[in-house]
Length: 104
Image (cartoon, rainbow, N blue to C red):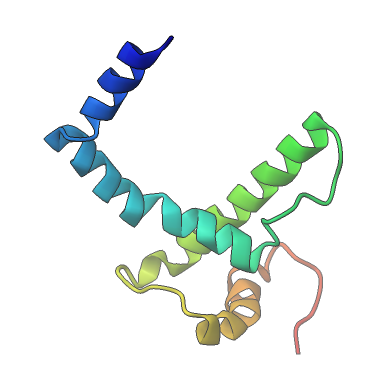
């Protein structure tokens, strides 16, 4: 029934533009989703309801953006799990003036 549409879409996969887009996605997009899955419990949402799920997803994305801003001083470095333990100290250094909690 939709064979002509399937054939046309499968034909797109052979184009150079499609291959370039897939290579870019593998480098820029997929690692972000993997980070959410591994570090921010992204396999399953804790909250229920569309509004709450959207809020939770935005909070996780905001957390990623804040981490990117904090490590902007060292461009090109990739955060490894062993380096994640230094985040509390780094966050305290940046947010101490606005955050009343103390860090040991």
